[in-house]
Image (cartoon, rainbow, N blue to C red):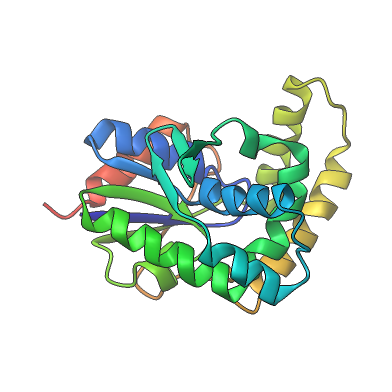
Length: 213
């Protein structure tokens, strides 16, 4: 069984997908980690991220394996290294590379072929798994998503105004919806859940109730 959870940044996709997978005994497919792994490899090999062909050549030379809480590139465990700020800043051009997205989409389908999964992202239900058993589009109002982000940053000791976060978030939403590939879009057969005012457990309960028996 394949369950996809798509939606904008700050809607709670990763947390919900991970906990849903744990409850069901499914594998959680961390697609973001896969893109981070490619970005780190590009940085390591000093590949220019705006050089489409160079990044394509890089991908042809990579073997990416991932499991529950770990990811390896060409046999090297890079689980911790892919979370660095440098890698974070390099994700966008990597994710916008058609060769990278094609390669990783194929890898994601191979993972799904091996067992039940819950996967989250921007295009999992609309492009990677168009025949998924259940597609969820997890959303929240812009103000609620910004509030959550502010709370998260404050827990890390960073003070940022809500208006600044909201402005950055709106800009990212616009970019995500207009990307040439992998754009954020709700699949026609996806079920939208607005998470405003809901605890994570409540969101998961709603999804579980929708799973085909």
